[in-house]
Length: 80
Image (tube, rainbow, N blue to C red):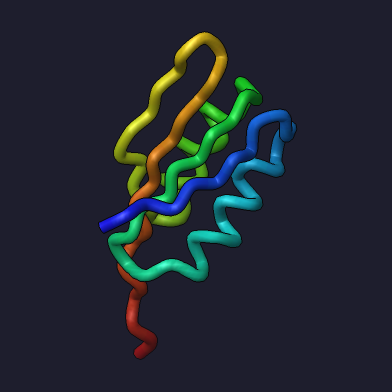
């Protein structure tokens, strides 16, 4: 399964999370999105975003200020 990539480098808070959320809404359960960012506040933003939305933050790296987040889309909860 391939992962989608969102290049949000150079964007400030809250744009990386907002753009990631928009893409995740159009993805299937279990698909992965890799987000590239440079805004240091994205570290906490993505942790909180995943905790609040149920998506899984499966990987994070910081290489010389270039941040990479891998998020696995949650399964949709069926409507009653």
